[in-house]
Length: 264
Length: 257
Image (cartoon, rainbow over all chains, first blue to last red):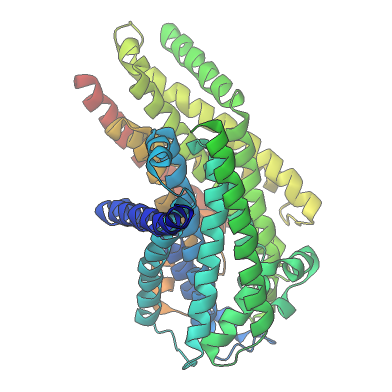
């Protein structure tokens, strides 16, 4: 009986995850608003890559793949992390409209719910990431990295998963759509308090100090290195990515437990 | 005429009070533009090393950004407030009274002007603390705030048009990215002659926001540049006139329903 329950529990975990992921993915792709998280990164990318190309000729700017590629990596990471945040908004909406309560009553293993949202968020990130990449190629981005691009994809996935788990945790703790700014603002700050326009060594003043201690800077720098075919800080970047995922898994599970206790 | 002024004054006071009672609106209207200013001014300081860059400080160059972005926030706030009045039925109830509907529109726009004035003054003070050097001196600062208010009024009237046409807060809020794009697709980050991509320079040249930005910027980094100021005020006035005409038409259409 115990073995059967344990086996059922594992099966339940994945069954719940797939069911939640299926519903969420269906919801995204049925609603054109699913593209919304991609819009801002696309706008920023077009505005920065198009309007600031001349920055690439500033003395000391030595990114091999050019300014468009330099901006592309930031836009891509922004697209997938904001996609994770939007998944958080969706979870908050599920709590507000009562769906989450029914879901938690029906789920045989509630941790599967978190995995389900993460899988759906990855599907969404693939879609928005593809959009940003296609646009970058259309406006003339050069790709220098060969197999190194897998490193870029890996970092992008870790960023998406970490942002999704963070958003899911906040959404399950607050259980209201008013959680929106609480999810969005820290992600926005982390993204912008990094070397967005020029490499870290060309920054100065308070922004250089903040960017130096921002863990996202290492991920961004390494991701740019992969695209240019000159990998750098690979281990620290993946280490930070994995650490963020682990911390936010614990955060999301803690929030799930709080939601269970609250009877949502 | 006296009654009309009383109506506008009452609704203007309501509009200003309503904004004042929403600390979140005021804080975000002040905080976000300053945050972007601080990040952009610092992150792009290397741009001042590009040959031909006007002035030697990117902080001075970037100062137009928070002022124009503030006007955008004003438009969204004004539009959302008016849309909320429509959604809640306040607008319909008002139309049953002898009050002229145009009073609501003008009253609301006074709220935009008040917010624009607050933002202009606060940003100017913070800018001066950050080391912004306004070459046109104190009279230039007054003109700068005036141009900011005019810009806010123009954007506010666009927000009002959206609200009157759709009657939906969500629809007004969803226009936010479009305003944001319009700001970024201008000469906000680099002078037009230093924009390398031809297609982007073309968009920036036909984008009236470039001239608003360049008008404000000229007061900071050049002094009194008649051409830049003429274009800036001309564009701002054109936006105000066109947007008010559109808002008036939308108002008549909504009243006829």
